[in-house]
Each structure stands twice: as structure tokens, then as C-alpha cells.
Image (tube, rainbow, N blue to C red; front, side):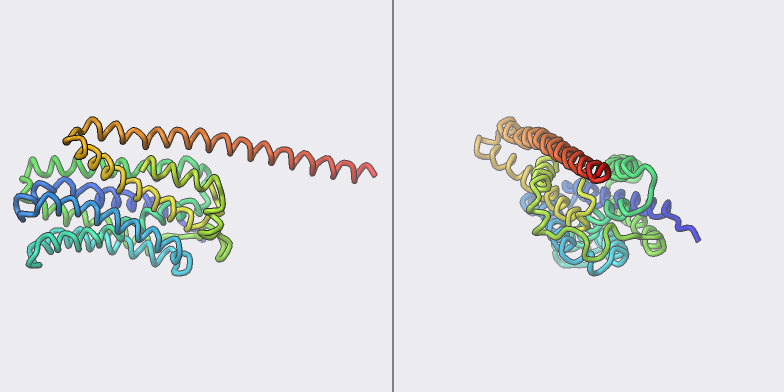
Amino acid sequence: MMKNYKKTKLACYLGFITQAVAANFAPLLFLKFHTDYNISLGNIAMISTSFFFTQLLVDLFCAKYVDKIGYRVCIVASEVCSAAGLVGLAFLPEIIPSPFIGIIISVILYAIGSGLIEVLGSPIVEACPFENKEATMSLLHSFYCWGAVGTILVSTVFFLLFGIGSWKWLAVIFALIPAINIINFATCPIESLVEEGQGMGIRKLFSNPMFLIAIVMMVSSKAFPTGGTAMFALLAMAGDLGGSIGPAIVGRVADMFGGSIHVGMRIGLLFPITLCFMLFLFNIMNHNANKQKGKTNEITCDRYTKRNNR
């Protein structure tokens, strides 16, 4: 019986859309939270910090334990947490005495789901026997962008039609995406990226210079096929770290210069400059590695030819 890997691909696409909803829906409501629940702006900022910090912890967990637990259990759990967090966002602020705590609990819940999706989506698709895998992987990551745009557009239209006071209904509607996707991930074929015990460990990954460059690139911007889940988890962690510290640095510098956002943004330019430099360095190292590999192959061929001539 042929395995339906198209269902796997669809599940991962919906997973990345879920991640986009988790990351972009709550920020649209920050002013609403501020006015309705009297949450200070400082605590409002803690909502985003809690989201990214939770994702960072999940990335660390995945690097160590996901290969042992199994992809399917973790990816299904990601959809359960995402759905529960979005539904919780609609109800917990009203149930719990402190609305802020209710929001934080909900955010942490769907951040756990988002972090698991972020780490597992790529290796699950990478392990599938698709013909044009590079195009498939590129399309996979584009679904986060489409999901982010869709979340903002759908929310805007919904608020125009029904008023922003109906945001709780929209949170429940968005929760249907991961809820339905639970079935997809529970039934679709899922392969392991590498055989058990064959993936590169964390220590081995950090001993690879090209991986270290990739880490810096991920931090600056927000292929190691045998890296396994640990590689994807650590790269995701670097992205979350960049997403957390980048705005914090820009904001702190702006405050130091009398609230000048222009000065802060100039400091923020260090991130794309670092990214460009690391891309340049990565290409040089990759070129040298391919060149060395070519020389090794030539030497091997020469030795083989000489043996045959004898």
C-alpha cells in the first residue's frame, strides 16, 4: 500500500500556518488587553517575551529528547497545545482573577505548540521521499509568511465586520486549524530524518564551523542533512534568540538616546550586516569544502587507475 505523503505535506503546511497564528494574533490585541484588562504596557511587553522564551526552551528540549520520544507524539502534542492555548486565550482572562495571568498561561500553552511545530515541521518534510525536495522545503517555510499575512487580513476584516470586541470568537475559530490538524498528523505517514542514534549530537554540531556560522545567521535574521532533529532545534533556538534580543536591544538603545527610534534602528542594522557577512563567509567555506572534496576524489580515482594498470 502506497503511503500518502501529500497528507504529511498538508499537515506540515497547516502546522506552519498555526505557528503564524500563534505568533501574530495576540499582538493585534495588545491595545485591547491594555484598555479592557488594565494591563500595564510593561506587562503587555511580557506577553511577547513569554512567547519567545517558551519557544526557546522548547527548542532546547527538542534538541535533546524529541528523537527519543518520537516525531508523531511530539507533533500531535504541538497541535493539541496550540488549539488549547488559542481557546484558553478566549476564556482564561475572564475565568482567572488576574486576566494577565490568564493570557500568559494561554500564550505559554500555544508557544509550546508553536515551538514544537517550528522544530519538527522541517525534518518531517525533509524525511519524506519527495522528488523536488528543495522546492517543497521552500514552499513549507513560505506558509509561515502566508499564515502571518492571512492572520492579519482575516483579523482586520473580522474586526471591521463584527467589531474588535468579538476577538474571542475569532480566537476560537483560529483554534480550529490546529484542532483539525491533530487528525492529519495522527494519521499521515511520518518518517525519521536519520536512523536512531545516527544523527549528529549537539556537541558534534557545535564542533562544525559551518553550523556555527548558520547559528549566527539565524540570530541575525531571526544544509546538514545528517544533523537530525538537534540541528533543526538549535537553529530554531537561534532564530527565537534573535527575535527576542533584537527588538530589546533596539528599544534599550533608543531609550538611552532620549527615545530616539532612529538611533535604535541604526544599531539594529548590525543584524542584517552580520547576516550578509556570515553568508559571504559561509559561501567561502562551502566552496573550499567542495574544492577539497574534488581533490580527494581525484586522488582516489588516480590510485584506482594505477592499481588497474598494474
